[in-house]
Length: 185
Length: 246
Image 1 (tube, rainbow over the protein chains, first blue to last red):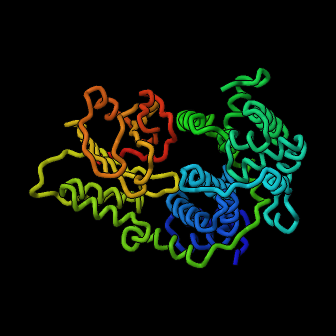
Image 2: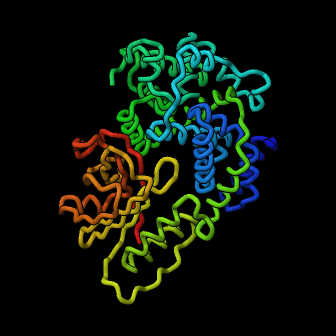
Image 3: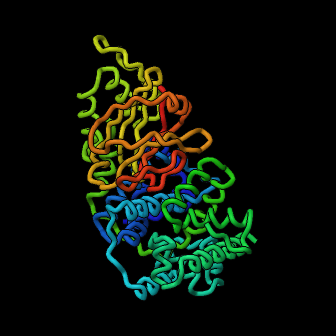
């Protein structure tokens, strides 16, 4: 499936969705649902729960499409942010019970960069982000990627890396500031 | 929060906005940062900028095709108010309406319409035999996932508050606490509430003033036996909703 839409086509489809156009809503779903399920599944590690969150995500998209502003956000970013936040809320609500992942396994996965075959949507923004993440030391870049991909808090990151909470906070806060300087010099 | 000595002021806010977007903060820190996000447009813009930057990390995620049944469920969900009943929301409204006065039921039906289609609310049918409840504020509290958690109706004349939780609120060992969210983003504790059954409360005079100006309500989950400070939940805020005037 996954009819590929360009950024502009997707933004247009979201705009029509905001006006109640169900065919446009369906185009948004077909173009983006596999990516968003990837995001929710990575956080929740449970297919059923990840699909439930996916359903909630698109219901939210239907209701809130009018708040999407194409001049300020990219449509896929807007969608990924909603899906990721919903999945994290489910994870932390207690209803989402995550299978434990070993530290090595988690960091191995997290440290993967984008492989060419997966990076279908890679634009300049994403290339720059990856360049800037690459300029951080490995543990900091890895921790930021893991936090994003798995939706885990400082507490979890610190215990996985076996460092004090304050150390993990310091790594990530400094990493974020360096990242921002690199992204918006 | 401890702040490293080399990160101050604007940088501190920038990092906090990034932490909020990344979702690494503890529940308490996150709730505080969310309040700032709601109250400070500049801070909210920083969070949005971080979302935009960080979402690029998702390009490393392998896409997974959803099962065929997901789309029909979504389609049913957007067919409100006529067809959608598989998410339990309509069943809740019906059950609740039966147990309520005609006026309240009519008011809540109007809210359903308001939620389902952002168009002018049709005039509610005038009740004939029910006592005047003078309900002027209602809110549908939803969980972060969009599911309805509770309906609230508040009569500012009598100070009476009605709460109708959905099944979403049941089965949690923590105790739900209701909060008023003031226009400037501050919160005020109303008190512990029953998450398993419809309940009715009379607000104290001190609270009726705040309830009259609040623009939203929220529910936090607190440890059993624990009463949080009047102005700050200690447990996670699980549900919230705008107060609508009728």
